[in-house]
Image (cartoon, rainbow, N blue to C red; front, side, top):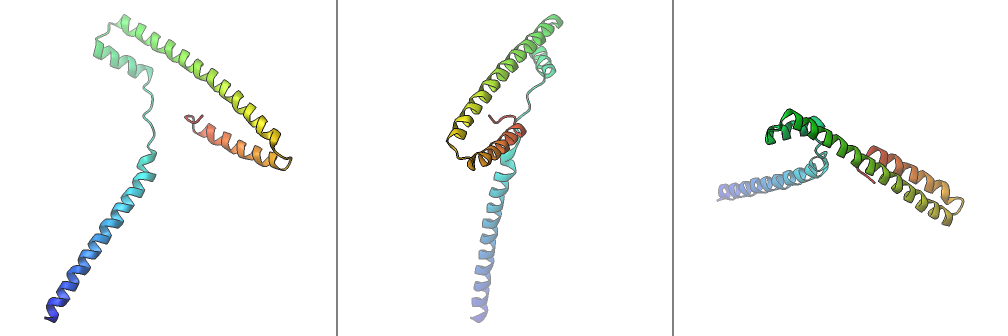
Length: 132
């Protein structure tokens, strides 16, 4: 009788340890996934050569078509880049105007703190080219 009770208690203890291990493993996997897998970098933009090569193969482009295709990709990318550059300049102007308005409502003691916070924000923005 005592032996059966001891076995039952041991079985329950093993089951509890097993369940706790599953919970701990699941929690660790979730946290690891959020912190590591969740910060994967976006896929890199395809290079001009990759685009032209892929389209040349898939569309069976002639050498002349492939050259024209590459020229069109170059032209389009340069126009898109110019558009982004203009938008970046406009965004910077809007940001500066907003900051000037904020500075106008701050006290002399608050302005240096605000400027330091904004400088840190700008530095972080330069590190992450996808932030605006």
